[in-house]
Amino acid sequence: MKTYFTLNNGIKIPSLGFGTWKTPDGETAIKSIKTAIEIGYKHIDAAAIYANEEGVGAGIKACGIERKDLFITSKLWNAERGYESTLKAFEKTLEDLQLDYLDLYLIHWPAAAHQFENWQEINAETWRAMEKLYNEGKIKSLGVSNFMPHHLEPLMKTAKTKPSVNQIEYHPGFTQPDCVKFCADNNIQVEGWSPLGRGEVLNNGILKSIAKKYNKSVAQVCIRWALQNGVIPLPKSVTPHRIEENFDVFNFQLTASDMTVINGLEKIGASGLDPDSVEF
Image (cartoon, rainbow, N blue to C red; front, side, top):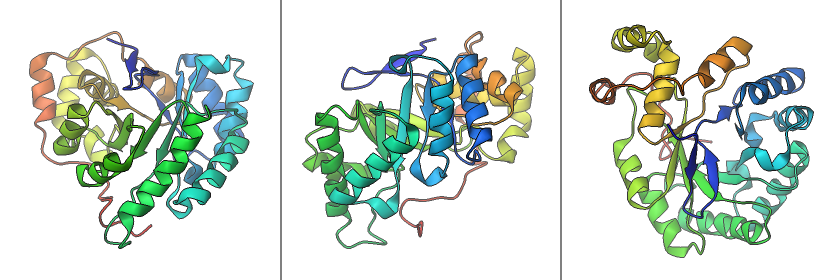
């Protein structure tokens, strides 16, 4: 199993990331990041709206790993869309994370038609600012999050730099196949947020029986399944043994038949967050 994928601009990205959503800022964030990096995570997924980037940055600094050996992502929040706002928001994120550059910067959610008449223009201007930062070497790769094909298509018409990544909700019981296929057809790497879904996923009888067969947890099966589908999962936890367990997925392989069963699960554990209806 590959421990890295290669993005469409040639940059290598670790195939398993460590999520930081809902991680409290301060000591909890510092400890969880240090623990994750000590266990072997090289890919940290952050965002301004998580309100913990100072703690995440302090954890990165405290881990003692060379910057070049880590892959750090952050995301632009919705209130900061637009050219000048994006540039300012990016500088604040860099300052909070105590970094000189990001490996990946994402538009967290698309400006969409239910909120803005000029949504395409807003996304294009946001992207233009990110391209400026990319060309200055402050960002190594550019991407989006929660963009469906109908958001990506107009953006790609005006973009000079193609998105390298699309981070979407992705877990057993919620696979967004049309979006995943569009990304594959356009050589855009998919990342999966909420790779363990909600409680319904972890308590699913089919997944429990598959996990038992491999002597693994349901969470490990979910993460392994995403990897075998070519998606980068971003599990999150502040509990050391869970952080370790979620990383211990490179020593087994799900059979083709088990992959088919998991791929075919009916809808379960979805967040209900739709980029064309969210109000934030």
